[in-house]
Amino acid sequence: MVERHTEYPSLQEAQISSRMADESTFIAVKPDGVQRGLVGEIIKRFEQKGFKLVAMKFVQASEELLKEHYTDLKALPFYPGLVKYMNSGPVVAMVWEGLNVVKTGRVMLGETNPANSKPGTIRGDFCIEVGRNIIHGSDSVDSAKREIGLWFKPEEVVSYKSCAQSWIYE
Ligand code: DAT
Ligand code: MG
Image (cartoon, rainbow, N blue to C red; front, side):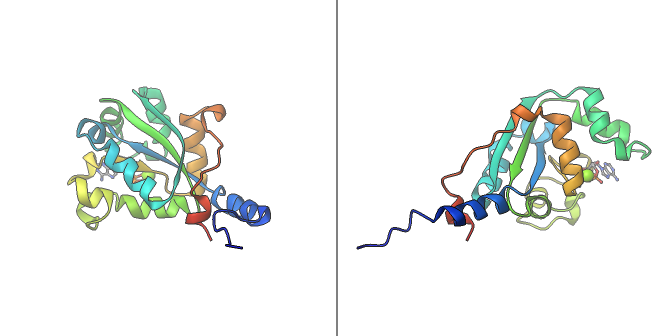
């Protein structure tokens, strides 16, 4: 009988599921990324890497939400300008799930300052100045939890099985 590679024992499948669902990160295409038509390109990179989209909304964020989102930076001189920039148009807010997605997501973004970001990273490929760096990504598992809770209601984060999971995780 021909062995079927499309089916896995349920235990293995359960182990894969728990490893990949372990971690989520908050990613947002900033107003400049939206205006410059880079939404699809950014989503594509996370999709093609193998991460799983579990929440997404197109939203004009309030000043209040943005101040809270960047509360750790409130003492810094660029904070008012940062909030104004983030409030200057709609953003695409997303939650992506997968193994080590917080750290790998940051690698995919590049450095905070695009000038220090390598080609091949999102900031390295699509922007020039730190104040117009087109994308946000959580910097730790704890900040991801805080940010996801700020931007999404629990019921807006969808749990589903990806048909590709056993081809992405071993
Ligand atoms: P990151 O977005 O890489 O996590 P951060 O949390 O230190 O970086 O800062 C948040 C955002 O603030 C960053 O994406 C762009 C802006 N920013 C950071 N440093 C800046 C600076 N020196 N001048 C102007 N904007 C800055
Ligand atoms: Mg940050």
